[in-house]
Length: 144
Image (cartoon, rainbow, N blue to C red):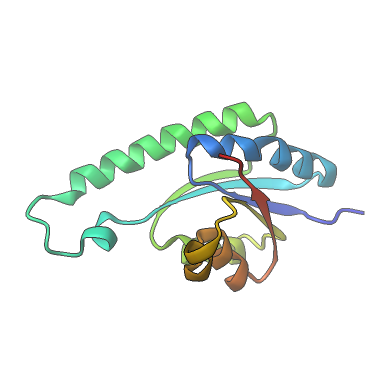
């Protein structure tokens, strides 16, 4: 019985996300699932507002190009066919939920740094993805 037909691997493209490769490949193989990779870039305007005296467009474009290259490299090392690779600009949790719904994903796989104390109270990206998802979410602990 196939438990998950479509798996979305949400990546932050840090060095630590390499720890998700084996888990994603094993889950996808065990379920003969379609595997989607997604990285969301938050717009620089989110961080800096609209009051920056420089053009953020060029920097945003460079971030986008770097993310596409990093995601392609990650996919090459995964050892499993990728159905779709996506680099999206927007709010991380919102975009991951949107992608999951549009592609009718059964499982979202995301790394979690296992924060404690104040960071836990304020919430994390993995926590935000978990609470708004309409499908299963597997948060894999990332060791630093």
